[in-house]
Figure 1: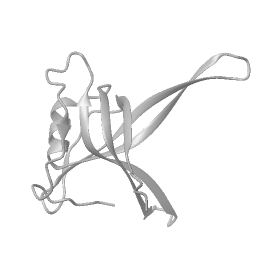
Figure 2: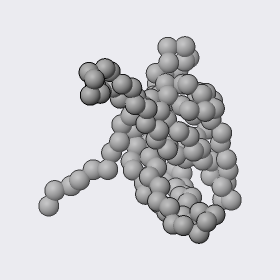
Figure 3: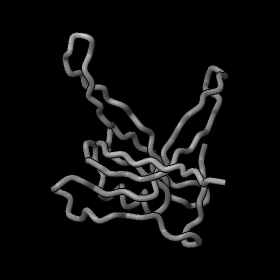
Figure 4: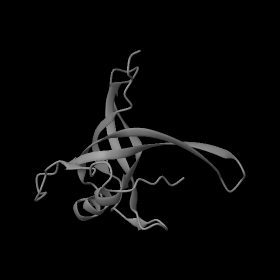
Length: 132
């Protein structure tokens, strides 16, 4: 039986300043949006830019480090995995959401003082918690 891997790697820019919240059990979490661009030719042969927005979730120490290093427009390389969740909206309609749970990231901006790879603590160091 082959093993399939749930892995995502993106380079993009943060859509807003980073905000970190604390869960009821004390775990830090940050939900941010990352913009990536794709270029393609339209039917007239002109280049067209399309922007895609990705929902990212940073947990624990990664959320704290992102808060210190990330501002709106910061260019990041992220590695993570896809997480699917659903919720009921205010109109009582079931909505499905795809997030990327970030496992590590690198700040790519040249003005960043430290562009080293930031990783999730090893298993057992930090409790993992998922919020809807």
